Length: 230
Length: 230
Image (cartoon, rainbow over all chains, first blue to last red; front, side):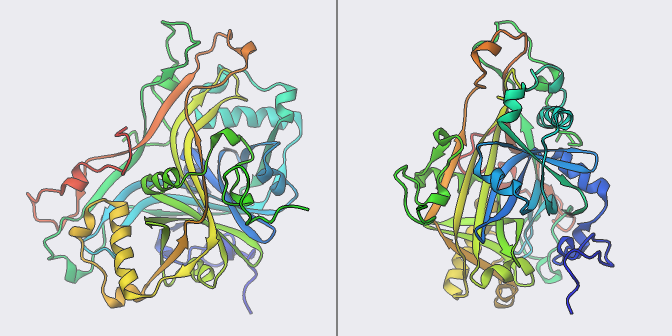
């Protein structure tokens, strides 16, 4: 008899569906790893089922302790479908490098990804909405919530915020050089890794900013939390 | 009566489910835009339905003319679920910038994303597999297929390649500065865009590469097709 998908497994995975089957050596079920990836990833992809069909869109997220929040518009068909209590699945992925093995077959990517499963809850308490508005603002640009005008009641009404408990989640991480077969090592082909990272450019002020106004440090020195700066 | 999801719409969208409802001004239904985003995006996210529940994982893709190919392992539960003819939904997203409006509510991201819907086909013809192996290799590192050892028959058996016709697809693109409300323009808050891009680092050779071996140009001068160079 198959183990129910939501039952914890002996591998340390919180459930069967979060267990990493392919390349289990890349699995990391620690919340510290999951949290670090969610915090560093600028966006995530959220999947749900609509009339039996899969749907996936990119969205902005923010983690506050044990809760993952997703941002959307109240007019967004997506989030209205999700708020009716449907199961959702979230994936946040950070690409760290291109792994060039001597064989195409062993070529790969260095990456860190997180999957979270659960049923979303619609956030409508004003106190929680205010916390989430700050968390989302600071997730995108750490420090920005001290400057940006926070939402009005009317703006909150036009926003859908979904909350998901970080209970059923797992991380998958690949690092390091290619792992070619022994027999391929003597091929006259360069092998290694091209590191990749999301890098900020110089901030571009909008036309209405008075000339000579200095861009804030979180814009001129933009940095993802935990990012190695490379 | 609702229009069937797969029927073309007057907006130019190839179907109801590919129509961009939220921020329709960001929609782009041209294949040229869809192709350019798919070609530049290093990875995509693929969603499907398993036992009524949503699933989403990151994967490597490559486009060849009107077909999108997805790479997986034959041992991968994901792709075996998909290959049984299930509907899939793919999303490829490129983040171009962080849009800091004066209000948190109008803050946004500059991005280009593509959604593709369809039923996947399992590729098993040797001639098509050989084309896809080169396309995937060159998608990840343009030029690499000339150097890397292409797969053996046994390696092809351990690989699952799914093909999806680029028929039902759409792009969504946001560019430019923040669009604050008129009443917020006089707030003493800097506003603008922090450009973001995926940037390659210096290639790191693996330990078995003979010292003094020069890394190839596609590694030292790594560049995504169409990328503006950061």
